Structures are given as structure tokens and as C-alpha cells.
Length: 152
Image (cartoon, rainbow, N blue to C red; front, side, top):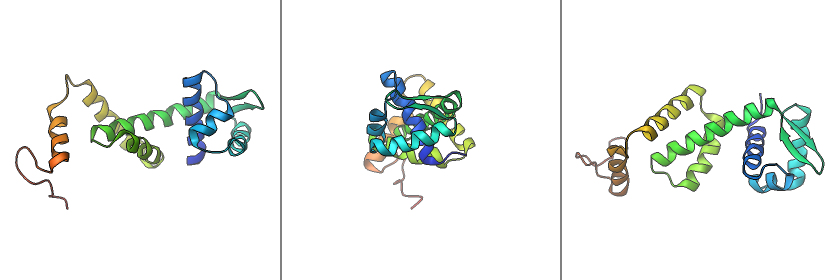
């Protein structure tokens, strides 16, 4: 079982690799807002554990094992971010919160959120309830009546 921190590193390596074609320590450090020495330390550990291949000056590549984990984490992150954006969370906050949630939610919960996100995205046009929900968020009034404070 990997730590949350290790999962974040693997996801960052995947993201940097996809964006730049390769993953250098400098870019991983920038992505995670860490110092290069901290990244190198984790790369050595992940290399020992078989998740990456780290070569000084050549950067980092994910092993098959590392890529499998990184893809799962990235998918969770993307799913949760999309869900949060559907419920009107600003993108920057949705991205940060997805980082926290991706490690904490049960796999079944994440799967159902992904099903909802896919359902909404595949619905023809913008589902009317999304527009109605956005208006509700703005003024706190339900279009069908009620003040929106039933759970408070």
C-alpha cells in the first residue's frame, strides 16, 4: 500500500510526462511545489520499490507497476474535479479538493461519482437542472419554491 504522498508523486510524474514527453526532477518539483532534493529522495524510494526508474540527470520514468497506480490516481482526480465543477465549485478549489478526496474516498463512491459525471457529460445539451442549480447557488432560492436551507 502506497502512501498518499507517494501516490501524489506518481500522479505528478504521469502528468509531467504527458505534458512534456519526459519527467525531469525540476518539473516534478515545480508541479508538487517542492524542492528538487525532496523529489530526488522520493524518486530513490519509488525506484527501490519498483514504481519508477530513476537515473540521475536522465529523469524519471514510470514502470508498468507505477503507471498502473498513477493512471488510477489521475482518473480519480479528474473524476472528482469534474464532479466538483458540476456542482459549481471554482476550478482552482475543485483541483485542490480533488487532490485530497482522491486518496480518501472508497472505490465504490468514486465509481458512482464517475458514473454521475459521465451521465451528465453525455446528456444532450446542458441538463436543465445544472442551470437551475447554478441559479440556486447564486440566490439560494429553488426555482420550484423553498429557500434552500432545508438541511441547515
